[in-house]
Image (cartoon, rainbow, N blue to C red; front, side, top):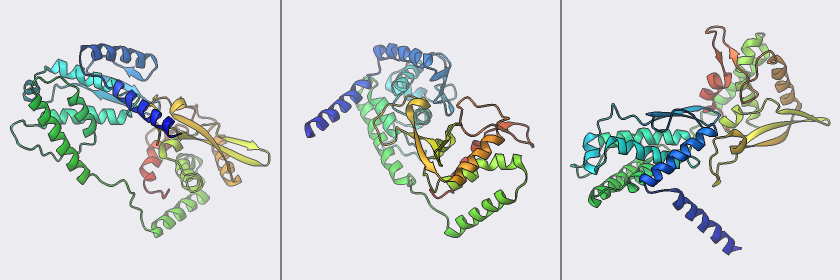
Length: 331
């Protein structure tokens, strides 16, 4: 049994190493091929490989990857390591496209932006690089520079040492991921306010708009889920099974696994069904009936676009209302 595990671990390590190319002409050509492949799959939605920016999507949100250096003071840095702006941009694009499937687009976007800041800030003449900038992609930046052919090894070594220092500083300054909860009185008060609003409000449009908050507050105590999972609850989530009701939600399959990111909801998430009390079924049934007049969204999720009276703009109530509040919810 242990031999199989050892083999599996070895294979995963080998695969990881093979997937990271040296940044050269061969990997550049392969990157252009991968770009076309991702464009055919609908993951890259705008731009050509040689453009200054690309538009990408994971179906949940759209992102921009901007490789432009026009406003970046990086001539000294690039001259020191011996590459042109054109070569540098191609290297960044090549590295980025090879990281598709491994990193989320938010991380890739941070990498591209933080790399620009680094090459504009780094001074080869200073014995130690100190920067208060918030780097959370030091690993990727270090890996990037380790894959570039720099004729002077001492220059490459100084870069990698500087990035090690930045990473150490970042670890010391990085905020912990442990959530700071409010006092219990705050939760009770919020629950009372929300419950009172739901019971007393006679404005259907207002209740439709705040429905995601009310559902999240009541449902998350029974079925813990991440904000994105909640927002992606399918429209056909409710089903009668005998005398009871079942609710189908989506769960992220990538967390804690070594799966590659497909940037497709149907692949990166799985549907999971739970039995729920009648009160939840009645609540969701009310919302489904009340929103029949609205057009389905592209992802066919439970929550609909609601036109706000003040602005006349169609917005997702989940985006406009629930996401800023979610950090307050004790789940």
